[in-house]
Image (cartoon, rainbow, N blue to C red; front, side, top):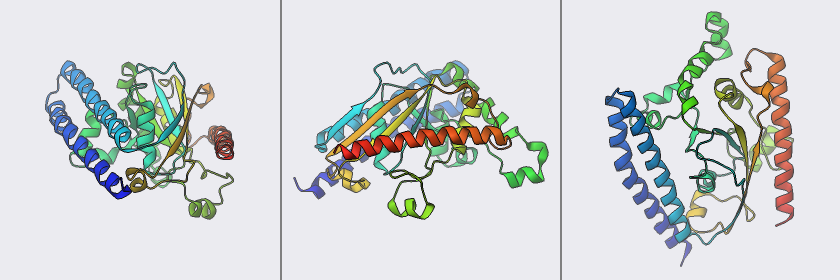
Length: 294
């Protein structure tokens, strides 16, 4: 089948799948917004997560039908849908999201992202993110805190309070430490000391650890490698991504990284950055080994 035909079929299947499950997701979201009863909202949260997981499973289904791809996946056997995980990964393509969902769906709780508090106001999607219990964070800049010192620590307190519900709700939070997709141009312009990665940005992870660190049981360190070159999303849809390597490693969270103040505690910030630097050095070496073995 010509690649463009494969791409059109895959795109239609993605669209149909998304529209079908959206027709279930948004009515449930509306009910959760208007019904303030805790027990009802808990049931609706379960149903919403089930809908999201079904959407991801169906994505894996059409991917299997349309993509003749050789997956090499290494992951722990003891992952649990009833666990609490902080998931981090290198970032090279929009395809990474589908790869992560395909690799981890129904093995851990639904992958969520920390979102800025302002995004809850986005029409329709803001309500959907809220209904799916995506964690929202509120952060003040150093400039704002310089003018309003009385607000120091208030953003973290607000986020911690919002995340209290996750103590009784198995949760997986995802973060791309590089903050953007890897390209050789970005790599060269930023002077990255790594061969296959951009410099990691530790601030977002540090904030998550400060807000929810004592709730996470471990870190899932995911390394994604495309042996035949980094694909665009359209490359992937056309079946031009013949191979994908995914390595998932479960790692403990150092106790000293939990509940620190990354913004104002210089010692904590330095220690956190050094820990992330070591993590990234190991990931870079892992990618180098994978590419040498291609």
